[in-house]
Length: 137
Image 1 (cartoon, helix red, strand yellow):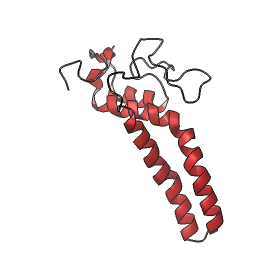
Image 2: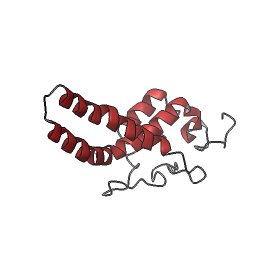
Image 3: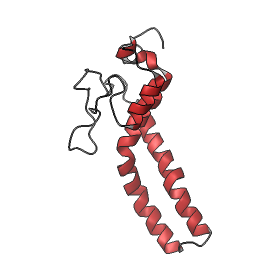
Image 4: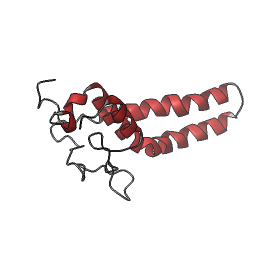
Protein backbone atom coordinates (compact mmCIF):
# COMPACT_ATOMS: atom_id res chain seq x y z
CA UNK A 1 0.00 0.00 0.00
CA UNK A 2 1.41 3.38 -1.01
CA UNK A 3 1.96 6.01 1.67
CA UNK A 4 0.55 9.46 0.88
CA UNK A 5 2.07 12.77 1.95
CA UNK A 6 -0.88 13.32 4.31
CA UNK A 7 -0.14 9.98 6.01
CA UNK A 8 3.54 10.94 6.32
CA UNK A 9 2.56 14.19 8.08
CA UNK A 10 0.14 12.44 10.46
CA UNK A 11 2.72 9.75 11.26
CA UNK A 12 5.43 12.36 11.80
CA UNK A 13 3.30 14.39 14.18
CA UNK A 14 2.44 11.22 16.11
CA UNK A 15 6.09 10.00 16.37
CA UNK A 16 5.30 6.90 14.30
CA UNK A 17 7.19 5.00 11.63
CA UNK A 18 6.84 6.93 8.35
CA UNK A 19 6.65 3.69 6.38
CA UNK A 20 4.03 1.61 8.24
CA UNK A 21 2.64 3.94 10.92
CA UNK A 22 3.43 1.76 13.94
CA UNK A 23 4.63 3.43 17.14
CA UNK A 24 8.15 1.98 16.95
CA UNK A 25 10.23 5.11 16.32
CA UNK A 26 11.60 5.27 19.88
CA UNK A 27 12.63 2.53 22.27
CA UNK A 28 9.99 1.93 24.95
CA UNK A 29 10.93 3.49 28.28
CA UNK A 30 13.88 5.41 26.81
CA UNK A 31 13.41 9.14 26.30
CA UNK A 32 16.38 9.83 24.01
CA UNK A 33 16.94 6.50 22.26
CA UNK A 34 15.64 5.96 18.74
CA UNK A 35 15.23 2.41 17.43
CA UNK A 36 17.67 1.60 14.63
CA UNK A 37 14.78 0.10 12.66
CA UNK A 38 11.04 -0.45 12.87
CA UNK A 39 10.16 -3.75 14.53
CA UNK A 40 6.91 -3.94 12.54
CA UNK A 41 8.15 -3.39 8.96
CA UNK A 42 11.97 -3.41 9.21
CA UNK A 43 12.35 0.17 7.93
CA UNK A 44 15.73 1.57 9.04
CA UNK A 45 15.48 4.91 10.87
CA UNK A 46 19.20 5.30 11.49
CA UNK A 47 21.33 5.88 8.45
CA UNK A 48 24.66 4.15 8.90
CA UNK A 49 26.02 5.58 5.66
CA UNK A 50 25.05 9.20 6.41
CA UNK A 51 26.24 10.53 9.76
CA UNK A 52 24.88 14.01 9.08
CA UNK A 53 21.30 12.99 8.28
CA UNK A 54 19.95 13.94 11.70
CA UNK A 55 21.88 17.19 11.82
CA UNK A 56 18.64 18.55 10.37
CA UNK A 57 16.66 17.42 13.42
CA UNK A 58 19.17 19.16 15.66
CA UNK A 59 18.82 22.35 13.62
CA UNK A 60 15.04 22.04 13.78
CA UNK A 61 15.21 21.61 17.55
CA UNK A 62 17.49 24.66 17.85
CA UNK A 63 15.21 26.81 15.68
CA UNK A 64 12.04 25.86 17.55
CA UNK A 65 13.77 26.53 20.88
CA UNK A 66 14.94 29.93 19.69
CA UNK A 67 11.71 31.05 18.03
CA UNK A 68 9.16 29.21 20.15
CA UNK A 69 10.69 29.63 23.60
CA UNK A 70 13.55 32.10 23.89
CA UNK A 71 12.05 34.87 21.73
CA UNK A 72 8.82 35.04 23.79
CA UNK A 73 10.87 35.16 27.02
CA UNK A 74 12.95 37.98 25.56
CA UNK A 75 9.83 39.89 24.48
CA UNK A 76 8.24 39.48 27.92
CA UNK A 77 11.37 40.95 29.48
CA UNK A 78 11.59 43.74 26.88
CA UNK A 79 8.01 44.86 27.55
CA UNK A 80 8.61 44.55 31.31
CA UNK A 81 6.00 41.83 31.84
CA UNK A 82 8.67 39.86 33.73
CA UNK A 83 11.84 41.11 35.36
CA UNK A 84 15.30 40.81 33.88
CA UNK A 85 16.43 38.30 36.48
CA UNK A 86 13.38 36.11 35.84
CA UNK A 87 14.00 36.33 32.10
CA UNK A 88 17.64 35.29 32.46
CA UNK A 89 16.69 32.36 34.69
CA UNK A 90 13.85 31.28 32.38
CA UNK A 91 16.08 31.59 29.32
CA UNK A 92 18.94 29.68 30.94
CA UNK A 93 16.80 26.84 32.26
CA UNK A 94 14.60 26.74 29.17
CA UNK A 95 17.55 26.68 26.79
CA UNK A 96 18.53 23.35 28.36
CA UNK A 97 15.16 21.81 29.27
CA UNK A 98 13.08 22.76 26.22
CA UNK A 99 15.37 21.05 23.65
CA UNK A 100 15.38 17.88 25.77
CA UNK A 101 11.58 17.86 25.91
CA UNK A 102 11.33 18.61 22.17
CA UNK A 103 13.94 15.98 21.17
CA UNK A 104 11.51 13.23 20.22
CA UNK A 105 9.33 15.55 18.18
CA UNK A 106 12.32 17.03 16.35
CA UNK A 107 13.62 13.60 15.31
CA UNK A 108 10.16 12.52 14.15
CA UNK A 109 9.45 15.83 12.41
CA UNK A 110 12.76 15.66 10.55
CA UNK A 111 11.88 12.21 9.20
CA UNK A 112 8.44 13.60 8.32
CA UNK A 113 9.97 16.54 6.44
CA UNK A 114 12.40 14.35 4.53
CA UNK A 115 9.82 11.80 3.41
CA UNK A 116 7.24 14.49 2.71
CA UNK A 117 9.52 15.76 -0.05
CA UNK A 118 10.86 12.33 -1.04
CA UNK A 119 7.95 9.88 -0.50
CA UNK A 120 9.34 7.66 -3.26
CA UNK A 121 12.22 6.72 -0.92
CA UNK A 122 9.88 4.87 1.47
CA UNK A 123 9.87 1.09 0.98
CA UNK A 124 6.06 1.13 0.97
CA UNK A 125 6.27 3.39 -2.10
CA UNK A 126 8.81 1.21 -3.89
CA UNK A 127 12.01 2.86 -2.61
CA UNK A 128 14.87 1.45 -0.62
CA UNK A 129 14.54 3.95 2.23
CA UNK A 130 18.07 5.26 1.86
CA UNK A 131 19.54 8.16 -0.03
CA UNK A 132 21.34 7.09 -3.18
CA UNK A 133 19.87 3.60 -3.40
CA UNK A 134 17.22 4.40 -5.96
CA UNK A 135 17.20 6.42 -9.15
CA UNK A 136 15.20 9.34 -7.75
CA UNK A 137 18.02 11.22 -6.05
